[in-house]
Every structure is written in C-alpha cells, then in structure tokens.
Image 1: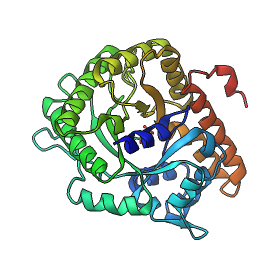
Image 2 (image 1 turned 60 degrees about the vertical axis):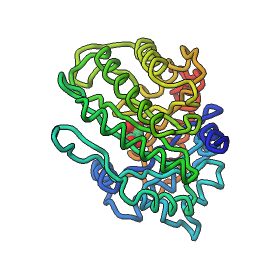
Image 3 (image 1 turned 60 degrees about the horizontal axis):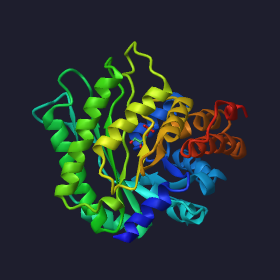
Length: 335
Ligand code: 13P
C-alpha cells in the first residue's frame, strides 16, 4: 500500500497539517450561535470557503477534513473538493455518525457509523475524498474510561480503518481522551496510553497497513478543572512518552487535536513537542478550534471582509506550521 503511505505523508509531511473543518451541523450551529450568526447552509459554506481559499492552505495545510454537507456543496459551480484539490491540499471526510450512549455503561460513549459504511466510503471517494476520520471519545474519572469503552471504541476504529483502506483512503484514527475533569497529567498519561495501545492491538488484529494510518490523539494535559499547572515542556515530555511507548514505529505520523486548548496553547505545546521529538514520527496538527476560533470571531462581525478573515486564519496556520517544525517563538505572534 505505498499509495496510502504517500497520501499520509502528503497530508502531514513538510511542516503541513490538517484543517479539521468537519464539525457536524449540530456542532457548527453551536459555534455560530455563540457569535450570533444564523446557522444556514449558506453561512456555513461562506465561512468555510473563506478558509479553503486562504493563502496558507497552499503552504501550511496538507489536508482538509470535511463534513457530509460540505463535501457535496459547490461554490461558483466548483465542488468544494475541487476547490481544495486546486490548492494542493487533499480533501478528507468525517465518516462516523457521532458518539452515542454506550449500552451497559451509559455515562460513556460509543461511536457509531459502521452500518452501510462501505457504500458511503465509495461515494465519498467518487466525490474526491482521499482520507477519512473517525473519532472515539473517552472521559477520565476514577472509574472511566472503562475496559468496555476502551475495547468497544478500539474495535469500531479498527473496523472503520479496514474499510477506509479497502476503498483506497487513509484512515485518521482519533481516540480522543477528553480534557474535562480534575485529574492530573500523569493520570491522563496512564489512561491515554491504555486507550492508544488498545487501538493498535485492534488495528493489528484487523490487518490494518500501519504505514497508511494517521493517529489523531489528544496531548497529555492536566484536566481542565485541575489545579495542577504544568509547563509546555512537561506537556511535551509526557506526550512524547505516551506516543513512543504506545504507537508502533510503522505509523508515519501523528496529528494532534486541539481539544479545547486556546490557539496559543495548542501552538506552543506542539512546538515544544517538536523541539523535543527524537522519534521518527512526524508530529503535526489536525486542529479545529485552534485554527478557526479567531477567524470565526472576526468573520462573524465582518462577514463581507474575506481578506481580513483570511489574514487571521493565515497567521494561525503559519504559526501551527512553524510549530510542526519546532520553529515557533512567542515573538512571532505579534502581527
Ligand atoms: P479540535 O481541534 O477543535 O479539538 O477539533 C479537532 C477534531 O477534529 C475533533 O474531532
């Protein structure tokens, strides 16, 4: 499967990363409500098209993850995957149908979407997608994530990854251990490592070609309600320890989610990871909020100012691309 490996390297190699613009309509509506914009298909498209046509897409973004609505939309009679491909970035698609209550452990979630997935993947391939995403989600408490949640989500991720590879697309495997809670970073390290190891056990059992996979994990952080304050350097040390111990060496790279970190935190922590990374793994980004937040805020007040919105997005994407190479400094944030 050299082709899948080539796609993965094109997406996250050379300091490039991923723009996660695959918010479901429900999530996007929440984001737009917060900035007082009506969540219509046109408004969702206009904001996203503004990002997809920014200068930084060419230099900083190797792949864009789309949602079902967006991959089927057109702008000035071009399809969105065509518009993205013209910049050199690769269109991707979120294919899970969301996290639902896990039977027998109802405080936890299991991600759904396997039924009919092969047929949907074939359709997305025809629409231009060359990579896919599936997110499993886990919470940390004393008792969670349970063995049941860890096992069932890993199984679903592996079955999804097998189908994506069968259809010629790179699967992004995203086991997100949420930041919510008052746990410390060492607990996050322990629980995230257990989750990731189980994912790879299942991926190997399902005969996944690991060279054609991108892992999308959380960084190792203290819980958002914890009093513990740890530095970027410590976050990087713990995150690297987790990944080096849990991820098979065949995997070409890792693209972190931002998971509620601010734009600067997500950039600074990624930069620290790359400054310390001695492994062969590419360490890049697949950010949603940490790439879009400020651009969305600006756009919501100035919906006609495409250039102004793009300038804000370009700055953030440039900072993330530098961080993906360990070349970011705080000074560069002054624009
Ligand atoms: P955030 O970077 O906003 O966490 O989103 C990434 C993502 O795609 C979550 O599935």
